[in-house]
Image 1 (tube, rainbow, N blue to C red):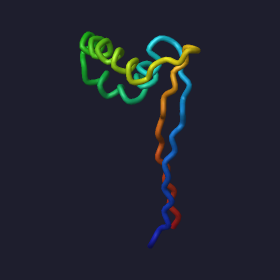
Image 2: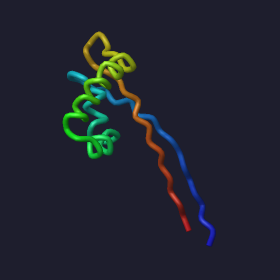
Image 3: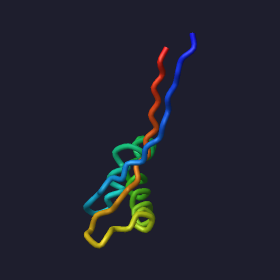
Length: 79
């Protein structure tokens, strides 16, 4: 039968701290397939090349924290 679907998008701002906070945040999620596909040495080299790009894209604030927008898409279907 037909279903009613509600879908929406929300962007959360994550306050991150520490050295290379965005790299550390995405390493547990978005970079897992990359890590799994590369030998350890190649993955370490990839991270080393990615780190300065992420620092430039998401600079630390004067207090040392970094704000990272984290987008989520939600969907609920009712039958």
